[in-house]
Length: 118
Image (cartoon, rainbow, N blue to C red; front, side, top):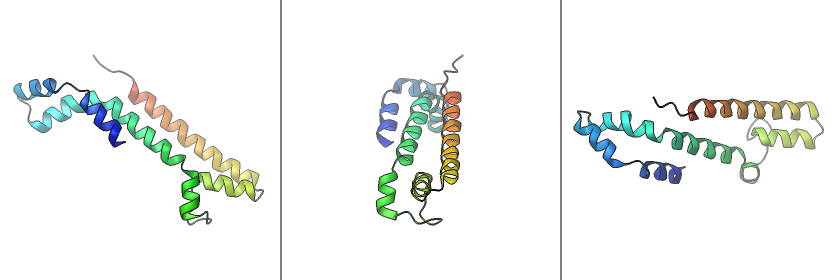
């Protein structure tokens, strides 16, 4: 995520922030009014990429924390545990929750990712 953020901020022309400061904005004002809106798509992309990587770390979580029900259980681990014990209905419910979370995040990404320049 840090690498994506760094590349995003490096691609922004520093002259734009300088012009904003010459026109009367403070350092923070120029950052919030100029730099941050220009970096919005890169920031949202970095957050979503990091979140999906964290969501997919099933093997690492299983190896480090184990899969103890209601203690160290994540949604992918819950799907695995329920499928391995034959509880298909609980596995499908956990998978549905995971799909709903993913669809909501995709919808949010699509709403904020649209180019809204005037």
